[in-house]
Length: 548
Picture (spheres, helix red, strand yellow):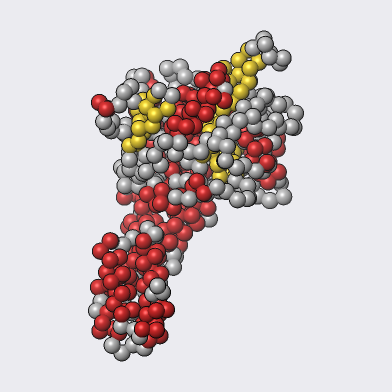
């Protein structure tokens, strides 16, 4: 299965009470009371949104403590092949909501109000929204029997495999989608359609499991893209106040996607309410604002979080042919508790100059009525190249800290990775800086200095150091396997030989668990070495090392 879904329905509640979930599928999916309460509140727009008709949005909530079923036990294998932005979340759930509110005179309050919520650890927003758009209308008419049939179909879906194109049957429709892998090209393109002639009816092909319409999301803030990209890069706290949950969640998800292929290491909540269990944690004034991008619709947050350094207020989306009026950059002192006008309220000054050529291309596209997906591709490519230009010098410097392969010998502990020196790195930028791949001018050094203090540098460095340490261990294993084991054993004591067996076995287990990047031939040779070494020991030691 791609996801374990939670379907919930319940009447909207204006008091500080939460009605229980009416239906949960599958029945063995266990949630704590706190998680159930969070889902109830997050699955309905608050009273300020006034959403009529059908609305789709998403949220992200922290997983509470307690035992979990092992349905996500294959996380490591999937995550090792998936892009960092699409890996399963270990400590958070994503919720994908289809909410309907329509007038209904047969209901006491005069409105039919229901939500269908799909909960997953996977950030496949496009796929799950498409799935809900098929299921929810039927569910609102037929209720439980419809969900039972859908869950039975989803149970037959294959596990998500990065690099593969899956055909997913549901409710008489086949949804075809490509699951991206780390080796895919970064540029987005429609997935290849496989075996179309064998599929009846013809499949509904999704261009992406996760990519949003960036141009539509960023239409009112295009002139501030450089500032917003830097705020995301530096992990700055940002409050996004939107008129509805769909605008809020899409803006937050679009902002957090700006750093790809860099992992977004900060917390983010596409939709957040005052009833959330972490409300006090995020709104406290006794410490600095947390590194989180918070999407809200209740203007109460303007008053509660007016001490936050960056607040983005966006208005109702306008999808007319012309580019909408761009929100203005305003000082935080201009922030009003009530009736705050759209704008980016911040005292932050971008280190880099904005890309005027990009703005001209996008504006020209609007004038020529260029399709939104083409506009989004231009914007996504710009952000990707900007992030890559920033990260490449860091990658090159980090690679220089790796010990030379010739210094790795089979019978000695491998040399250590050299420490990261910020000063040495900054000096290297004169000849190997981002100016080699990016035309934007500005204070790159100042941006790097602030980046060093951010959660994203810490997350990037830890991950790269871990990968290099594993590579070092893999090279050491290869060096051992290429050496003459019998020559080494000639003058070694039994203790030294047994120690080698234990260390080789440990490396072999790690390598077989896909934690070490080694070839299959190396694994086979390591196993042969272990057997050879054990065979040279006395029978009693052989019995200890190889029990029957």
